[in-house]
Length: 322
Image (cartoon, helix red, strand yellow):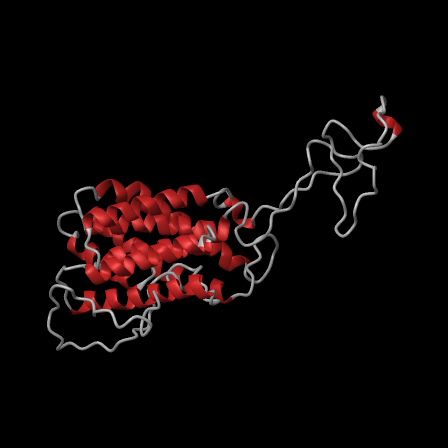
């Protein structure tokens, strides 16, 4: 989602720059910017809730419906109107593809089926093998000495993989927002979108570009929170930090501060994966996005940065444990 300060800043800048050459594209970018501001606030509220129950009527139901509806509308605008018009752009193309991946990221977090936040209900075993109650062991020889019955109505184990008489199939309740958007498994689509976006960012932008770091930052959060791949998230975060430090591209004050802040967040990702610190990044734009509060004061008199813009590494063990 374009809910981080960096993404929203670039989105507003591109909307203004394209207002003359492509007014329709500019209007769509402004709409997505407004939608992202509203959606960011709702994502923050949802993140503060202990548990967002999407299967029954609760106080958070309206919030959940708003998140899914805004995500659906934003995804339609990006896929149908923005992406077809940005093949000749560089930074805007990367940002547009990141928007698509971010919207799917939100669907995985709030609308995926099966949910990534709860254990799925075990289904009936098709081969007719009876399940054992937890804590109870089967009687010795009971699985081998069971007599074969020619008539299934005589009783005993139910064969053929059918359910016992009177036992209805267990079904997982669907999210209440299924009338807005089908609840399905969005993980493969989201993963593909992030891979495509990361490839574009590597090809079109320098290692220290804030948009490129923003893409990798949310991708790392997606790996950790949705795919539960802590090691993959750590490697991606560490590789992004190394690329940012080794980049030789010139950048101005704003881009330097944005890149610096996101690198600091990536360092927390690395420490979290190593030491298992309970630091959640499951909400795009809050944990996985750039922070709204600047960690370094803005100094308008700072000269423009040249090659090797990001600060040099400290001694091992002082700033970054890797």
